[in-house]
Length: 211
Length: 211
Image (cartoon, rainbow over all chains, first blue to last red; front, top):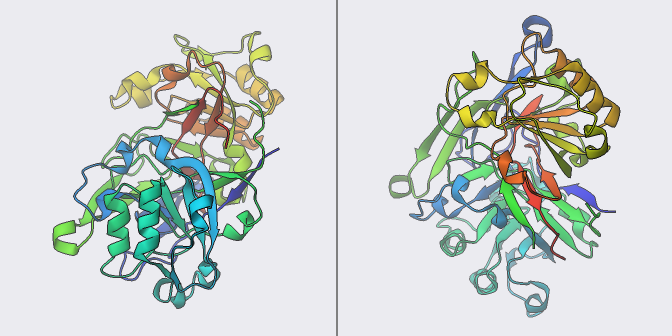
């Protein structure tokens, strides 16, 4: 049997967002007793919470999220345990662990401070050599339990996105994958005409069930 | 090899919504040249576009979308071809086609008129006997290329949701599954504290690749 693990933060009114980004508004505007049904209204920037950055975020790409093939959002997952590294670098062993077209997740455990000021300010970053390695391996997507793989002027963002490697930010619960032998990531964004999208991220662990 | 098929409508500014629902607003508020990055802002009710209704929509359930197990949103798919039926009823053959815990999709081809006035007004509905059959089979989710399985006073909605059968509305492209021997549906909603959620819906068709 397989099991599904949720790697997403909850979308809430006034949830944490990147400094200077618009606040998230989520409120109930219809009520069962008064209106006959419940309904909620959401207002958010597409870089809030767990989300995917696509090339349009920082390049002159004209492809919206809705234009990108679904194949980019699902694939074999690969977790790298990089806890304790404030600048996350390349290690030789990664050459054997990471395969082409993988969805690579970096487990820093920085999600432990999600909801505090520290989360968006004092986060680890990745270095250029590691980014180059991901480009050489042609991974599909880089997932992080961080708000960003870098800081201003966002050279790592630009490097990855300009090579069509998607960036999946603000993951949580990556510890649940530490001892998983193999797993698959499903991170299908909304089919939206935007540069980024909020996303629910699920990992499927263990042998597949036969359908 | 497997392939992924997209069953979702695109989220656009001013896209079609259910009569009297708030309009969807999607606009760009940051521009690469002026701001150093592109960003989009979204405002929408959670019953716009392709979305999942959960019991809270029409019952006194206190479970938000974010509280529901991921297992409900993924599973073996089953397509019923019900084209031409304005009231979709039970047929004996469904007993052999539909299995417990399936995600059942009704293919009406009503999505062909998506974007016209007719879409939200003159759509097919399902009858109580068919709803009872889905309840008896304990399916996980009912998917429709319709805005709703019924009209006011929404008895079918209430019947299904009160028995914890989720309703996946406004699907498209179901014709692509007509000749699929077996397929799996992945319809993970946002992890949102709401009664419903926009969702990207993917069908995986054919033999699984080995991970």
